[in-house]
Image (cartoon, rainbow, N blue to C red; front, side):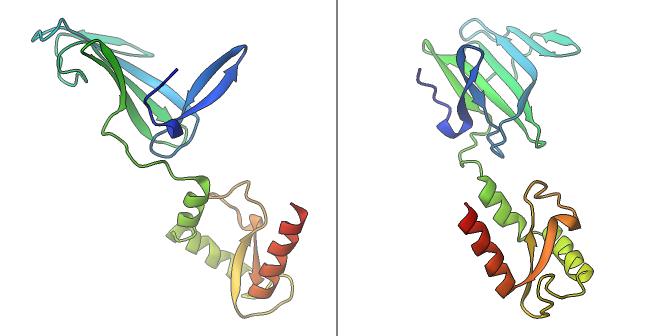
Length: 189
């Protein structure tokens, strides 16, 4: 099966005995996506009017307005999704010359950021700077292993709550102890 949504938006998954594809969010790469609503555009080829229906979990609205139809000549479908990371995105499905096409609205072209890329961006953020400063103050601006007071950094003791860490998830370390800490972790892998 050849699906023309970029490979990094689809992930093979098994559900029961079936091999399926799991849709990842094209904005952030998160794989927990939810279908929120569906818009159907029914149209005879090149007709000015047709049927438009928007369905979500609570209601269905029907009219004859074809504004927003992803196909400029025939039937079209828009699937409105959200991901558990808070993004919203649409998948357009439409026909042209006997072919069916899939496309993300607004043609999201860049590959979603990896967790590592998001983490490195986070380390440059104001949010991280604030929590880093809080941890250094809590440690009285001293290494929590050797009591050195120069070249301090804040290290994650656990990455379970990364992006939403508590001060207890962190440790203030001097450069020397920080390097030792990483060498110990590397050796245990």
